[in-house]
Image 1: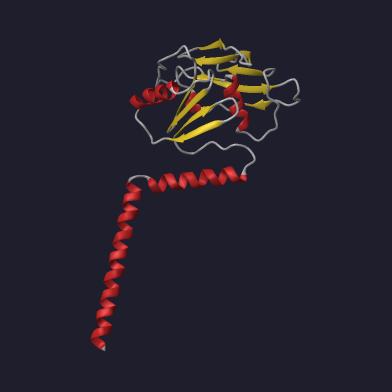
Image 2: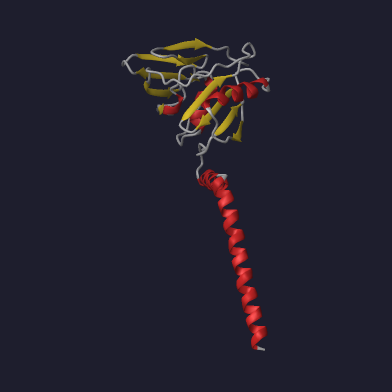
Length: 221
């Protein structure tokens, strides 16, 4: 009887040890491959999306394709700078709706491009601009209040295209103030040299090194 009890005891101890080692190996694998981290990020994002009445920016690297009325998110593993241009160009080649907005977040850098059917290669710069916007305010004739448009610091890279009408709508969707949106809005902007100017829904800004360029874009019906 005693021998049988000892045998069962040792077997259970052995089984317990094996299970512990197996679970530990799974944990190490998940940790080394960032599976646990990505799962936690995804769960936090989904939880925040449920409790807020407005859209929440994902807290992990992503690619976002912004169409007229919807957005498509794709999770993105942190990639090298040399892979970013090819990734954007690959995605752009699959789009067929002009003026769709493509946004890519890679750690603390963001890339924003307006899809154009006349462009086959989207150049990417990894150099920060020396020209910043101090404030951007959204106004509309049917609104009594102004809404501050927050520009992510990661967007201040040479070559980024910001504040197009689709870009502005996206900014409004990710804040908690009520708004009216159509092509009658006006953005009131102050730049780093305290210069004041406005842009409309038919314009956007191309970020340069020491200057920005206000460019026109055709309004689609």
